[in-house]
Amino acid sequence: MTTYDDRASLTDLTAVAERVRSSVEGVIEGKPEVVRLSLTVLLAEGHLLIEDVPGVGKTMLAKALARSIDCSVRRIQFTPDLLPSDITGVSIWDQQRRDFEFKPGAIFAQVVIGDEINRASPKTQSALLESMEERQVTIDGQTYELPSPFMVVATQNPVEMEGTYPLPEAQRDRFMARVSVGYPSAEAELQMLDVHGGVSPLEDLQPVAHAHEILKLIEAVRGVHVAEPVRRYAVDLVGATRTHPELRLGASPRATLHLLRAAKAAAALSGRDYALPDDVQALAVAVLAHRLLPTAQAQLNRRTAEQVVHDILQRTPVPAAAPQQTAFGVGGRGAAFGQQPPRRL
Image 1 (tube, rainbow, N blue to C red):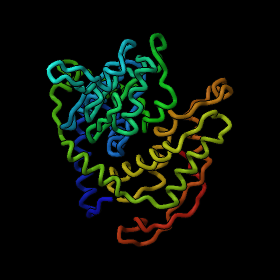
Image 2: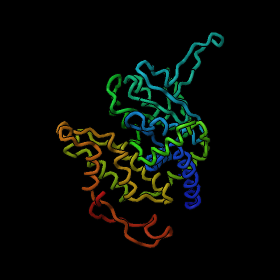
Image 3: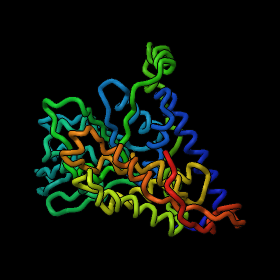
Image 4: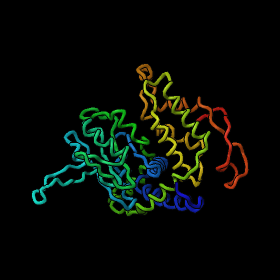
């Protein structure tokens, strides 16, 4: 655990995050909540799945986030004929050395953009499993570490069925959060015509943060305090998905860990060195919904996984902080939590 001056580290974190946020929002107009979630996943050491209809800026968002950070970036266009070795790499026989030489694949980058990930075959998709979870690649019995920080930003179109292979549950579970960009407002679309009508703003986008700065921010996020009642609240939310009558597959323990990490990152982005139940609540849908499988009856009733998560949030009691003065102000790290009825969202 990193020891640091809380206020100084969080001030640095919010300053760097604000630069990255402003840079990305210069390309993606009118979607501040989507940009903030992307930053949250980055600082929480997770991976992001961007799922939406064609043409709303999924790939643009991924590229803008990658180019705003001075680090190595690789883009993979997933197609049905893409091979696992195209992602992980391959060992090639070197005639001069009379030995095999490993040629790294596209996964060996700090930010990997997987465009239309559901167009590749399940065999190729599975090549990402070890990389995303263990941040390493094993080829011919040899393990190679991936660079740090490491983040996979994948996009997929949910409405296209021909020539696509739905992501298996194990693959979706490795993404910390799923986000939908959505259509822009009329004002944002008018601004987009002015900005994107000539030259793409990506061409002029310059890095505003270095990879070593992101690593320091990740260390600061790890030091964010989470009280026991907040941890229990996250466990209760995830546990409720496993017993809900409208779900045939609930969230895994990995989902609980991802929810807690994301809450810590969200708290740090808000300038706090401690997480609140509100942080967990705000991220529950993005972190949990894509991991859940509704029952056939729920699908007939047109109930989505997002609606079920909202229902669980309303039913689960929220721990309330008892006001008390601490070294961090009222309701800081030393705040005690009790139970209060679930609040409406």
